[in-house]
Image (cartoon, rainbow, N blue to C red; front, side):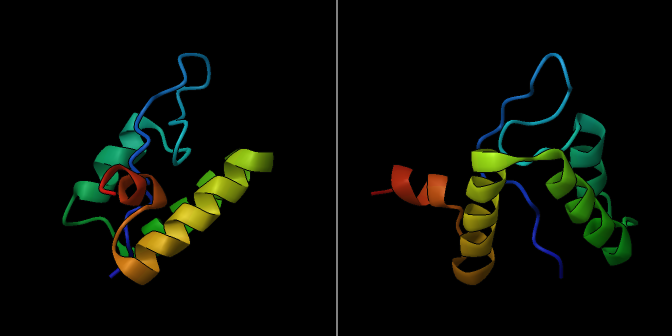
Length: 82
């Protein structure tokens, strides 16, 4: 199973249409929830969204996504639950 790249910072940039947290479009977010979406598409989508992010945003996403994969929770959600 491929873990969703959502890191619980769900706000869409009105200019680019990309989520500030994960870099996905709303259509990509919907595709992640579909049963017929393949793991191959999800892997490619993660690479695509990483290419959209730069600097601190990419670093923050990678750290939080790794934490979500390793511990089941994004860093943002972890901080809220403290």
